[in-house]
Amino acid sequence: MKRTARSSQRKQDSGSVKVKHAKRAARSPRSRVRKQRAQQTELPFRGWGGARPGAGRKPKGERPMLPHDKRPSHKASVPVLITTKLLPGLPSLRRPGEAARIRAALAGARRSANSRNGESSAGGRSAPFQVVHYSIQSNHLHLLVEAPDRAALTGGMRSLLVRIARALNRLWGRTGRVFADRFHERELRNPRQVRNALVYVLQNLRRHGICMDGPDPLSSGPEFDGWRPTAARITRNEPLGSTRGGGAGAGRGLRTLSRAGRIDLPRPSTWLLGVGWQRHGLIDLDERPVLR
Image (cartoon, rainbow, N blue to C red; front, side, top):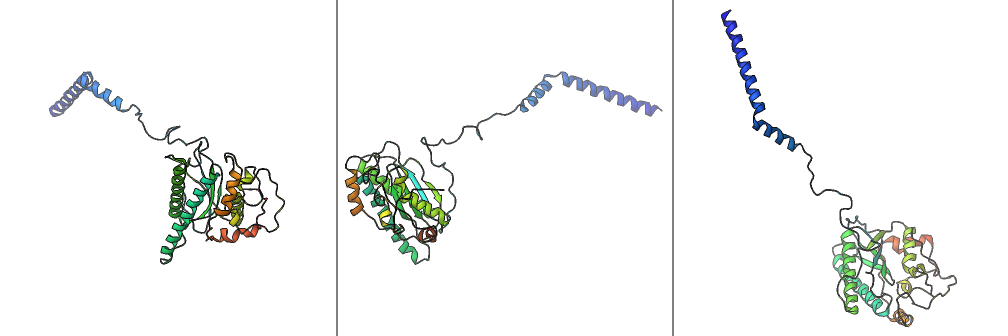
């Protein structure tokens, strides 16, 4: 009985001592500081970075063409329609001097492509990047190109645009950028799309409301062999080669270029651009572009 009473008394004493220590700890300033620190870590953290509305690289120009995203892969059997625009305020590309330099750049790109093709033929690889058809407008270019893969397409376009920009800057006596933005590309996956793209490129002058007798001399139309023999009636709304910003005497200059400034076109390497598009018929000289 005595031992039981002593043990219970010890438990009561230890319990009272614990209660006293707990009360002292609650009244101590250190505990209050610890509680305040614990409460501060629970506050929401607001930092910089991450996705925010309006963040990121802003598009260039009033009508930006493409964001700077990674371009998709490319197959050798698919031709591509390319469009690239000039910076605002530059002279017209349909003047004789500008057109001649663009054609020279196209011819130089073809010669370099042929040399690469000769080197790669031993290795059994497909034909390199090549421009099959083109159209020179006042402030933009349309191209129908072929390439074996994405690297060849991007590299070939970069090399060609650098050639054109350097030649035009030498002519204009200036430095800096010539093209406003990245080039726009559209893959042509069936004969109907390829035929519509051919009309769009070769007859692009009619899309801008300008008609003339025969193909546009500042395009690959004169060398194109897919015109329908019985062409429909053609009306002349403006003199040959006259465009906005073309300057006086542009018609005479374009006639001269149409005779002496021609370049040889490469043979298409894709079935679609070679013969596939002819499933939907040859092209009339008075046909207007319809691109779907």
